Length: 441
Picture 1 (cartoon, rainbow, N blue to C red):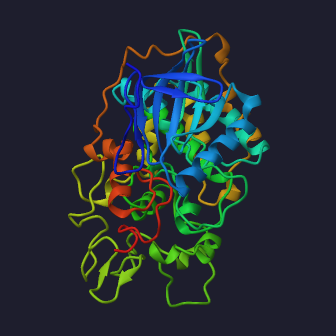
Picture 2 (picture 1 turned 90 degrees about the horizontal axis):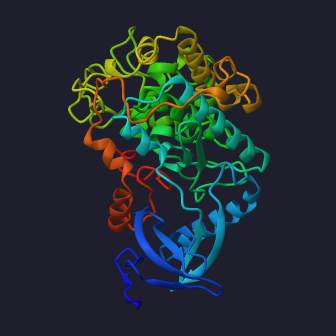
């Protein structure tokens, strides 16, 4: 029975029931299913009563911040209407019971759900190349239109069509996107895919999407995140362990650098060697900021400063070990690729492809046109390749995903955060202010 069966919960969003009716000026939709929730909106599957076509509707929560996010997403989706092969299709926007709504294309599962379907074993090289090419094409369009997505991750990459010969993906969720280079006033991007310039407090632009793409492609192939940090501090330490210390230009200009690094007394030295992270073999101290009051470092280690990560509150995500030695190093990075395929050429090209993207300084990252010509993507003709059978996982994952990762994947986390703090957040994603507990330890 149709009726006004909507219930407003304490997070200022509408809870709809199956068969509820949503009327607009020109359409009538019936609610068929609840698809999920985020910090900013709830998503439902709906059907047009006139055409019987099915859509997804995002119903944003009430409040100025939610309205701005929703209207920003609608504006950008309309701007991208001519690129429907790469982005979710926008159909309509309207207000329903004082809540801003967007009706858009109903897509299939997101990429993270398909990674889970492989038991976190990842995809083969051909599938990985296919996804990389499509994502690069989408990012190229965004750059042409002057748009930075700001939250590229597997959850925001949905499947449009999949069969034994094609694998089509589309990018969704442009609520965090922007059209001008940003001064670092708040944290954007989900943490696992967050670029160094964002964390260090530098201005950011299109380069953050490219960094995220590199992280996503690694996860697509291996089945596990490249930088699964539980805080921004851990992210920076993971980056440094694999890629080295950030360039001096970033360390001298980032407004948040003091949260993660300190400069030695030699103020005249102007090389990266004057900045340190992890253990300094020539001293009994860490090259990270210390708390002078209780003489502890940012990891909670007391005076004497043992090796990073030995504190009980600083554990690795995919290991029982409590030592930073389990962070991914370059040999470990190589092994994580080569252990999943016997194709030495593809393995070497994939590693080169990823490392060319994962440059600390955004100006050192390649342009998309050059990446599209990278040997990893052009050495194999994908047009006649059958895609990987997702139902036949071949490899065993060594380190299973912990409960913490599932928590960061669920939108309910963001909802609980908002309820407690009354600050908009997004499951370790956007609007994560410097006043958060992890930054004020």
